[in-house]
Length: 274
Image (cartoon, rainbow, N blue to C red):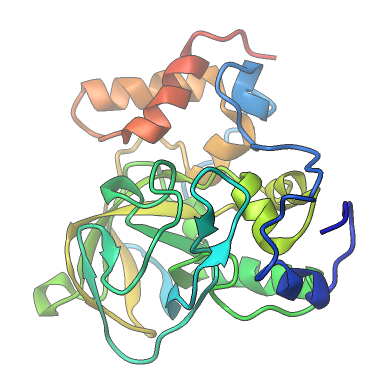
């Protein structure tokens, strides 16, 4: 595929399903790079609070998505499972995610700490318009939530459906870090930066208690750590003060920080605020 820097067309996205992206000259490979000051964010939070408290309704599931087919990818794994689509009716979820789902690059995607990837449904609609029309699941999301899922705290425990009636209990483990695989998946050389600009990149969930989910299920906060560092706030700033707050919350037993998030938290904790 020839170099693309800004064409927002459905044809580009559809072409990416069969093109491995080896001809795409990316303007950035990864949104947040370990070792960079503030990991590519601005380093200063604006005291954005968490809007959710224990028991609050975050939103409702509007779509559950699983892999449609694997696409070729120029990355080390050779394939990508980013092409997902909506599944009707109840869907079984285990500790590693939706039982019918797959992952191409298992070193960076999937696993127990990234069992489910949830996006705001409003964000999916925004990007569908930007890209010329895409179906739910086309950005790799497993769950679309009608609600501000990015505004939950890192480490929060959520319910999806009623766990007592077969629903899920999950932990918010961190944020998506837009990468080259994602950019190749939509055929956009500038996608890492473009997708990151809104600071609503979606969240990863670990499944603490598996079960069955479906569209219409409520997503509620069971418990929040109370450190006030939401997923959106962390991705936007990587503020060293927030990093220290996250680590302190873990020390006091209020929060479990997943390893893929903790490495960025530790790196940010001792940086000078820019």
